[in-house]
Amino acid sequence: MDLRQLRQFVTVADTLHFGRAAALLGMTQPPLSQSIQALEREVGAPLFDRTKRSVALTAFGSQWLDHVRPALDGVAALPEIAGRLRTGAAGRIALSFVSTADYSVLPLLVQLYSTRFPDVEISLIEATSDVQIDALLNGRTDAGILIPTRPALPEGLDYRTLLVEPLVAAVPEAWIAEGRLGPVGPMLRGEGWMDQPLLIFPPRVSPDFHALVLGYYRSRGREPLIRQEAIQMQTIISLVSAGMGMALVPRSLQHLARTGVRYLPLGKDAPVLETGLAWRSGDPSPTLAAFLKTVEEERPGESMARS
Image 1 (cartoon, rainbow, N blue to C red):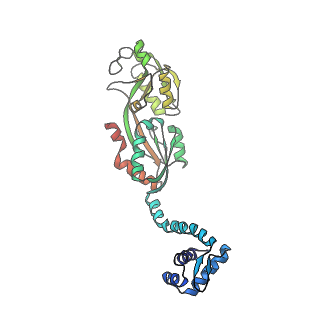
Image 2: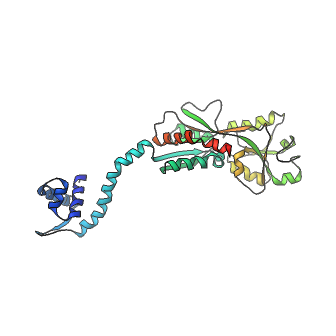
Image 3: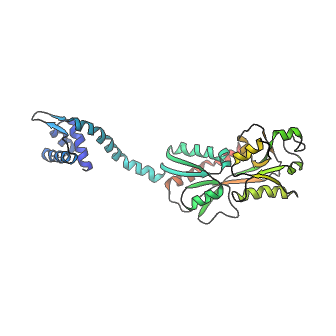
């Protein structure tokens, strides 16, 4: 069967008159009758009860009509759907992100993009930066919010900075009461707190973040006492809450409230962490192009920095 036959069937079903249906379809009655008969042979059941005075749908024809109408409506919508897919207004996009982005640019960026393009299905995958890079290079994701590797990301990836923010100290509140951190006011003071156990990302997961923290200690002639490594920022904060150590984390992580944890600024010379967006160079995906345009026009990182 073809679409022409299905449209003819619906027209006859609507008019219940072969002559009027033929006129609406711009054809004569005999070819229309022959076409409906051919359709009946193909489906294996009569669609209409015909007499000299009337035409009526059979029980089978009435039930089949309920399936034919939406099928034709779906076909009629295909050109519009194709246009929306072509412009990125519909479709799918797979976005990966590091755990720290969940408390900074990710929620705002997803909100901005989904508001602009509500018909795009967004698949969100939490992953460390190294896993994201591999997924991007192998086509398993379309874009990734990650902590960049310096001096450059691998060839084949483009990159845009989203957010640059200072690190703050996440410390157990009990340590403050015990005086283990030295004098504490609106921020950490002195350098005695650097003698306390440190919780940190492992270097294989985020070498730049790891090096940033160690560099901050070593620039002051100190060597951190690393107590535990963890690949999820939520895990690190949980360990801080349990009193196992302290951590230097992005300022936006203060949105992760946890009982027993206090976030304290490090001062004007606090190290800064960059978070950015990576994607495959030359990727022709329309949804990715629309996503990148949203990032460029809305600049969610700047909104985060101002807030």
